[in-house]
Image 1: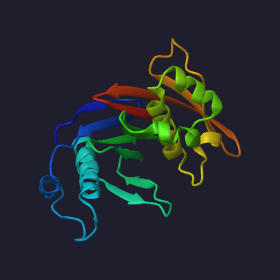
Image 2: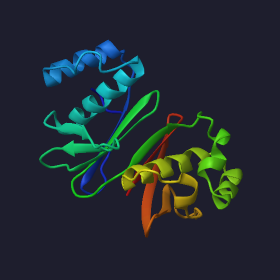
Image 3: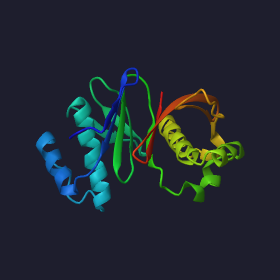
Image 4: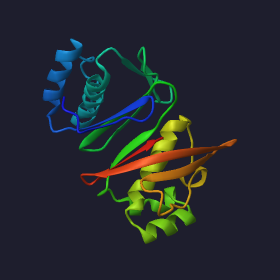
Length: 206
């Protein structure tokens, strides 16, 4: 499975892949690598099937097939591997992304820049953040990706994107770097990076 992009944060690895195959082609590749298929009827839609196979084929392309992905009761992926302990997963209609790390929890998100973020911007952006996106509309997609990545990093239910995840004002010298703060019972600063490519944005915790 050819990789579109590989990024190597310290003690981690991020893989990005553009899925051009049909579901049956991904299923065939999966069977060749893992020697078994998921339970029949596990997927109600072809898109979900492509995402499921894409994540596992991408992960196998990064570190080999000796891993398992389980899920907590709230749907947080749990990674089982002798070296990498944490995983974050994201996908758009065209891309799948996986972030693996050896020693700390991580979060990432991949989004199409064509998604209509303006329709829901007041639900996930504070007034200060809205001012920034009015100056630079591209930040609508970037900021959504930041909040998704922080949410996945936190692994908590019921986080209010608008009120509890705040993005600090971007400084001109901070190219492709964003600082956010998660407000729960305490404040947790989170640094993130983002990458623009092929009409998409990839955001991931540093």
